[in-house]
Image (tube, rainbow, N blue to C red; front, side, top):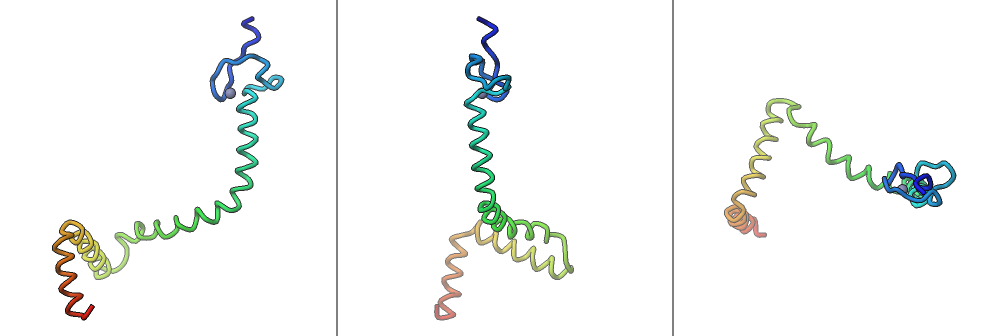
Amino acid sequence: MAASWRRCQKCRKVLPVDDFEGDSEICRADASKAAAATTVGTRASVTTRVTTTRPRVPTTPPRDIRGHGDVEVRARRARSRALDRLSEVHAEEFAEILREERASEGL
Ligand SMILES: [Zn+2]
């Protein structure tokens, strides 16, 4: 009876030989899953490649920019980042100051 059992190389389950296609090392369930994944994958890759690569592009340059450019440019960038962080740390004060400044601009 032991000879009629085989371990699937994919899901690691010990299954009856009937669950395997001929000498296949993976069970029928995994074989059909793999087949479905490849058909879906090839079909989806055409559309997903376009949609997934686009949002990734703008996220990389800001990281690469750091440490590059003239001293003035780097200093301005550092100051602007510091101001952003300051506005986050002191959100309430920033909101109050912003309100004052916006009011003075007639906003
Ligand atoms: Zn399996």
